Structure formats: structure tokens, C-alpha cells
Amino acid sequence: MPARLSRRRLVKVAAAAIAAPYFVPARVLGKDGAVAPSNQITLGVIGYGNRARSILPHFLRFPEIRCIAASDVQAKRLEACKQTIDGHYKNADCKTQPDFRDLLARGDVQAVFIATGNRWHGMGSIMAMRAGKDVYSEKPICLTIEEGRAIVNTANRTGAIYQAGHQRRSVDSYRFQIEAVRKGLIGKLKEIEWQVWQGATVKPKADEPVPAGLDWDMWLGQTPWHEYNQARMLGWQLFYDTAEGWLTDMGAHYTDIAQWGHDSDDTGPIEYEGSAQWDPTAMSDTPMTGEVTATYADGVKMIMKQKGQFADRYIRFTGDKGWIQVDDHTDVVTAEPREILRRRGAGGRSWADTGGHIGDWLNSIKTRQPAVANPETAFRATAICLILNICLRLGRKVKWDPKTEKFVGDEEANRMLSRAIRGPWHL
Image 1 (cartoon, helix red, strand yellow):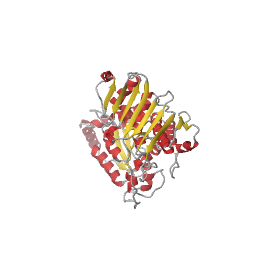
Image 2 (cartoon, rainbow, N blue to C red; image 1 turned 90 degrees about the horizontal axis):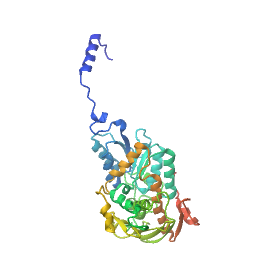
Image 3 (tube, rainbow, N blue to C red; image 1 turned 180 degrees about the horizontal axis):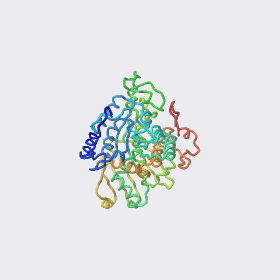
Image 4 (cartoon, rainbow, N blue to C red; image 1 turned 60 degrees about the vertical axis):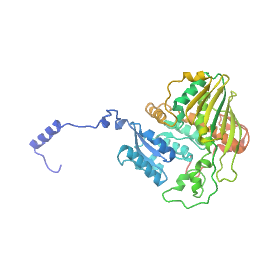
């Protein structure tokens, strides 16, 4: 104390302190709908592209989430993410780390939302779980079968709660579709059919200097080195190095629903056959159109198509007594016989509202029970997409053993279960 207080003065100060009202904000006590800081889950955001801009507001709606950090290799995006978070909380507290490893090293971050490009989903999730974080990762969850299995093994070893962005598992229309299939309302299941839209192509363009504010080496991550090329960066979903085209990028949603309806979350089809069309003049190297039929051990066939327009996507289950379909663009459910639809309750949120899926993840964090799109389930769904792409790139039928996670009698295909990883990254 800068000066001694007399006994009389000390008594007066103490009496005033006792008499004065002591105000504690409701948010500190967890009253009036607020969540006390001690009960909040602190979140870091890794990647702030189109998907993150769409989903982050749904995370921020939850009072039990406190978003405190952000990371992106592009300076402008990183600043935009900070502004979004700070604008929500009306402060300037969000910390920014261009290198997500610095974010993972923070002891005050409990969980992460990974919304990078596909090339970082698997590696980023593994590193986050090793750092003691729970993970919500966008799909598809991995680049290879090897990486997907490593995600599952890491989650099992660390006890991390992991949720893949397969939000249709938390949507009323798809839940009703699965209920109808599981209850036999369409009879014995015979066929599952789904469709994504026709792929685009990226035409050749000259390499360029790396623009200011971009860590290009970090952007590439584990994938092979390429000189900076704006067309490659903007069209990354259409290059096999960094993604696998729409059959995997969007198809993972439908293989996930197909697995759920077929009650095969821990296994998958055993045979794949199909064909695709590429643009030989393009710099990109993923299919424009294609169709693959995957067959389960019980004879049920999954027909996976890439054609048509963005609004033409759907998934349909067909049995020996009828069918049920969800139009993914409109969220409309149709069925034959139409009486099936009378069993449906009031509609809920559409796939565009990820709040239910985030809520499921938060509940899993609290209870330490697996989320609805847990690592094994998400990996098996993604594996189907990876395998169908291998089938198409080889141009022939392949046979798959879901138990050993190997192709049967096909060493050329087995060499495609992993890819060379550019240092310093490793699984």
C-alpha cells in the first residue's frame, strides 16, 4: 500500500465495502440464459474460406461456445475472420495466428473448427487431436484411405471428440428418409442412387509470383509442390493433388446417408465398376461426368452419378415395394407409395442450417460420447468416394475388402491407398 491507513480509516473503508452493492454480471454467474465462462467451450477457427463464412455464424449462435482464436494462411481472410468474431462479441479479443500450429499450441483453446481446403482436413484434424483438442472438421475428412484410418486411430488413442461436417445426419428430411428405409416402408432395400452436378474444368494458365499476404508453401501443405498459379489455387477442388472433384467433395454427403440407410457405418461396398469423362485440354484432372456402381456383400447396389446441374442433386433409396427420395436442392421428400409421407412429422431445419449438427457435437463434448458423424462413420463414407475415384482413374473394376481395407489381388490399386507426403508433414 502506498500509505498506511489508520485503524479508524480502515474500519470506515471496510464498512463502506460491506454496505455497497456488489454487482456481478449475469454472464459471469450463468444466469438469464447466459453461460458462465467456466462452462464455455473455447474455440479456434482454422481456415476462413466460403464454407467457414457460411458456418461460423452457426457456431457463434451457441452461448456455450466462446470463439477466441483464428488462423488462415491468407492475411486478408484472417483479418476478415477476426472482424467477424470480434463483431459478434463486440470486442477486439480474437487472437490471430497465420500458422495454425501456433493456435494448436495454445492451452486456452479447447476445440477447433477446421474449414480449410480438403488437403488440410485430415492432417489438421490429426494434429489438433494430438494437441488435446476436440475437432469439428469439414468434409471430405481425408485425402487418402491411409489418412482416414489415421484420423480414426488418433481419435481412439487420444479420446478426442470428433464430428465430421456430414450435417445431413442432423436434418429432419434425411432422418425421415432413413427411418422409412430402416422400418421397411419401401420393402426390402435393392438400390441406392445419388447424383452430384457436372464437374467444371480449369484451363491452362501461366504461373505467377506469389501475391503478398499468402503463405503459398503452407497453403499446399502435404501436397506436391507447384509454383503459384491463381487458377490452381482458385480451382483447387478440381485437382487430384488437393481434392478429388465433386464425386468426393459433395459425394461424401450422400455416401454417408447411403451407409446410414444400409446400416453399414462400419463397413462398405465390396465391388466398384464405372466410367468417367475428363477434359483432355484442361489443367485440372478430375472427372467432368461419370457413373460408378458399388455393390454391397448383400447385393444392394449404390449407383453414383455425376451429371446435370447443381440443382439436380438427390439421393433415392429403392426397395421391392417402393422408393423414397430427398431432393438436396429443395429439401423436398418424395416417395412411392405416397402414404409413406403421411408418417412424417413436422419438418425441421434443412441441411443449410448446421445448428443441429453443431449442437450434437457440443453435447458429445460435454458427455464424452461419440458424435453422430464420428470418425469411423465419416471415414467409411469418405472411403467409398476415394475408392470410386481410384476405380475411375484405373479405368477398370476393383474389388475391396472392408475388413482389411485393401483391394483384393490388385497391387496397383493398393499403391493408391496412400500418397507421398511433402515434408515436413507426416501422419
